[in-house]
Image: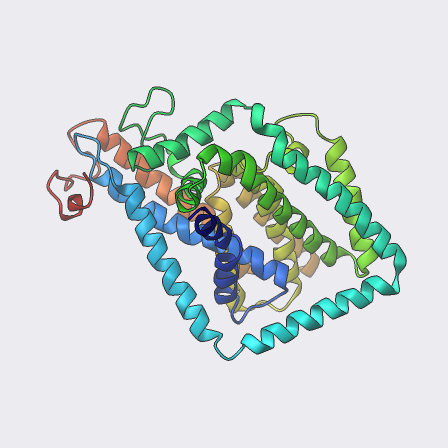
Length: 390
């Protein structure tokens, strides 16, 4: 049973991102790392949309007494949607299985030739792997006895979702309900980790402090290899880039709040995933797409990454628009004309969605604090959706 649960956990970082990425980029492929990360953030985007539906219903139905059942509703919706997507992907790719195996074999052979032709590349790769293993060890073991206030916030939030069957509904200090804090309510990362905990049977703290840092550190360096491939042509130059980056990160370990610390040993908080993986990937991905001919087919992958990144933390409301607008301005200056409006709009889908959801939650919260129902006067105690909640 433990192996089955562990496999179910692993599928969220292997099969699910591949399926979602292949579907989102079906006619908008770039390379395998980009498609995988698009799938990873696209999966977070799907989860976030379902999360907003479940949480919106939960708060809509909170008139006098607290209600329960939103977390279970979210798990059911997410499970059904993912099952449908996997089945659809299997049917869609039914004639391509042998072709995929051939592509993988060709890619492995090509990489092997590139490495064996230059022995220095092998040396550089070994050096990088040693540094990566050191960082993986730190990610796995360092934070077991090192907690910050934010850690308590994240862990308690996720555990409350499981134990009370609610979504961002419990005061993380005294446990009172309902207590909706907009900052936490508009971010679904803690709930996503709670879902991973339920799926795998691992404790929330184990997922946060042991499993996620390892997976996310590998994601981070896959992302930085994607950056290196955009900047450098030769494989040995790319590996040297990763070595320099690893050394800089290791010697930059000086503060819990620095990006270098997050990369070395603490990638599990939403803002860490945003700053270490989401924003760097999104910027390089946008630059690569802006350099090509503007096509509508790329708007869906851009919007998916934008929404998935925005779901990580409320901090994305400030950082993401600033970076995507900056990239757009740079490209307009480079092209000497207004350029890529469609990509800019797609890039702002995530912050816009989060902003609208924030306003909705804030209005519901104000209604929950009094009986006059200033904004939503039709909210009543006996509604059909209450049959789900208890």
